[in-house]
Image (cartoon, rainbow, N blue to C red; front, side, top):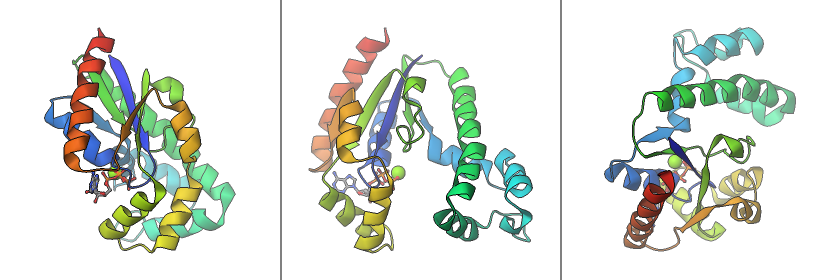
Length: 197
Ligand SMILES: Nc1ncnc2c1ncn2[C@@H]1O[C@H](COP(=O)(O)OP(=O)(O)OP(=O)(O)O)[C@@H](O)[C@H]1O
Ligand SMILES: [Mg+2]
């Protein structure tokens, strides 16, 4: 199976693009969805978080105390690294598991932190969704209850735009409207079908 890693900075349009590929019947594996599932009650990561980081991150109802964990890792690099050591291997193992069940010429692996986790070699092709920082900030402001300063801080914590573009095998420019986006997705779909052979 030919694996296309779809990545890009916050709010650049990864989910929007993944949905367009889905409409073309391309299987999508979503790392964010997996991350969410494995920390839900009964999820494999939750037990490890409780054991290695502490029971205080589990709420009385069995759910992960996301805001407490977020606050901790924001202030503590060591704890952040501990959490990543739990999460990343489990996420990539689950992606492998889901891939093994698919039969299609190629699959889109939507992995926002593909470059940050240094897992470039996990995929055959790196597809970057790109737009200028002002567009990112405007779209995320509209979507989430975050200030421009908070969004800028997230952007600065991610791989830089220059670095991301340098690593891209293909690029989707999502500065303009949805029509422009669909055209680029349709074009790439044909290209990936050929490359997958
Ligand atoms: N071409 C476009 N024109 C206008 N709005 C857009 C366009 N593409 C995406 N959006 C909107 O911008 C916001 C961010 O897009 P999306 O959620 O797809 O980004 P993302 O990269 O998945 O973000 P995240 O990193 O937070 O997961 C969404 O509200 C989406 O509807
Ligand atoms: Mg998204």
